[in-house]
Structure formats: C-alpha cells, structure tokens
Length: 109
Image 1 (cartoon, rainbow, N blue to C red):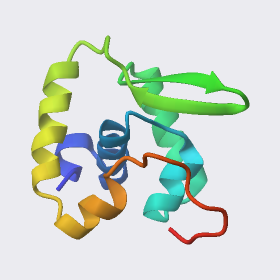
Image 2 (cartoon, one colour; image 1 turned 90 degrees about the vertical axis):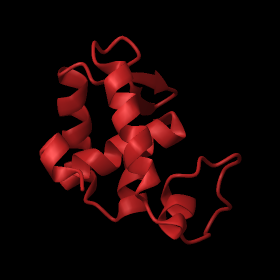
Image 3 (tube, rainbow, N blue to C red; image 1 turned 180 degrees about the horizontal axis):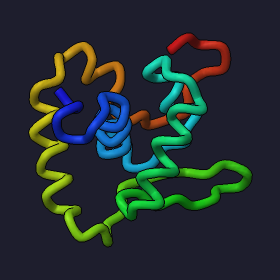
Image 4 (cartoon, rainbow, N blue to C red; image 1 turned 180 degrees about the vertical axis):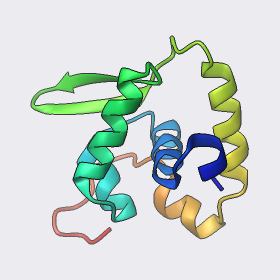
C-alpha cells in the first residue's frame, strides 16, 4: 500500500507509526515491525535529512517525530490519516495505538 507513495513499504509503516505515536525511538519501531534496527535508523536519518522528520535527544535516546514545519505537513498528515483507515483493526490495535504507560519488563510485543 505504501510503496507507490513513499518508495518503500518500510518508510510508509515508519511514518504511520510516528503519526499515531507522535514520537518514537528507532529500537521501538524496529521491535514493533520486526525490522532490522539498522534499516529503521537509515530510513529515519534519510527522512530527517529531507526535512520530513525531526529528532531530539531525551537523555541518551534520540526520539523522532513528524516535522510540523515540513512544507507538505498537512498533505502528509492527510495521507497518513487516510492510510490508517485501510489498516486492519487487529494491526491498528497492536501497532498504531499509542501506549499510555511503559510496557512491563519482559512482556513480549
């Protein structure tokens, strides 16, 4: 679904994850989708370089989010909202529902 729009399926899933969770760190995204961490970091850094994402340090962790100053931010958010409508209910609950508190230690994803 995302490949025609974003050039890769991973990039679309990462953007949708960041849209639904506001901010996330690379390891969290990699674990959620069972992607290689290096692949996620490369995608995030490329999108940050292009101005689509921003990053900030929180302690030793670098958080990424969708850049509100991106020139096409409104259009990107509209596309991501529409894409979220096509995600199955189970996948939406598992991957795209923001967590309200930290996950218990040792609990599987």
